[in-house]
Image 1 (cartoon, one colour):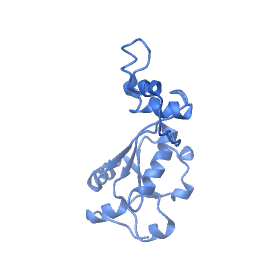
Image 2: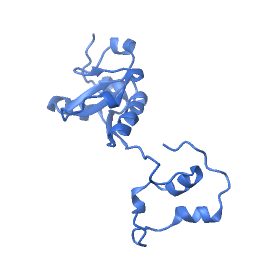
Image 3: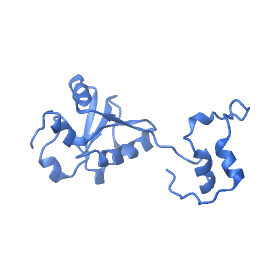
Image 4: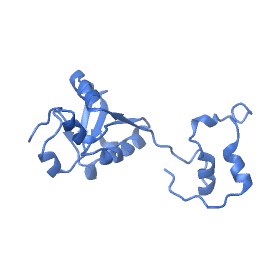
Length: 161
């Protein structure tokens, strides 16, 4: 992900780089729609190229109802990234607990074909874990929007341990 700050004053030539048309149509070989708007400016400011900048896969928000349907169908692996203390207060039935500070996406066994859905208390930590997982898989990652707070507010079941 790009973390460098853009300079306040950009040269006119640099600004034109970001405003160019579709280079595929102009014979340039790259479809400019495949990269985010402003990519050229951000990459130029950091000295990076399209080959060296990784664009993270997007997060997919699931509602409590959508997640409940997927759990019922048996098509998901639900991972809770909250702390031990939070998990002691209750979890989504069938969820696997991997605290965010121990979450290592590269070591997850993804061979069973189930989609992974992450959740935490409110959605912030599951989004962090999702970005980590997307970096490894190169695929969008699903998480429960609003976390277990939204799950409980929707009247979905919680298991106490």
